[in-house]
Length: 120
Image 1: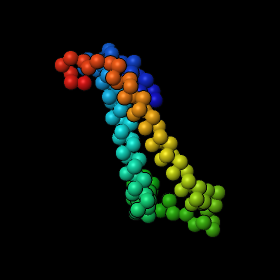
Image 2: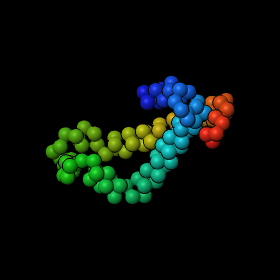
Image 3: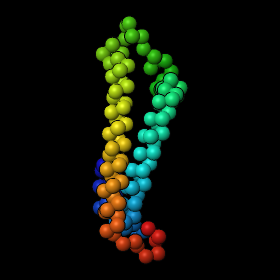
Image 4: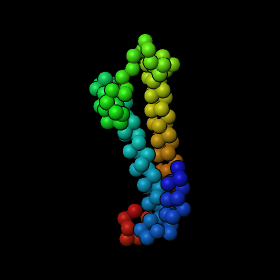
């Protein structure tokens, strides 16, 4: 959020950047988030076990993400259903925010004329 605010404040002052190009960049970022969330959702829907394994191998030390439901408190306090519902909620909020941002930016970006010679 701080990066977005800083970029917006600097958009008119940096060479090659205009308010129009700023809103274009925010739109591209929102579209990227939307596409990423849809792709992640499809992968999770059709290959959850493989995606889970790859994700945890990349971001956690080996063996630290395998829990015994009989003895480990983490999976006793937060069962599988909690993680499933939380993931769906986070994905749905990200998709909704992306769509709202894209819709709002379409109006804002059109208010600013393109900067001559920059193609933006």
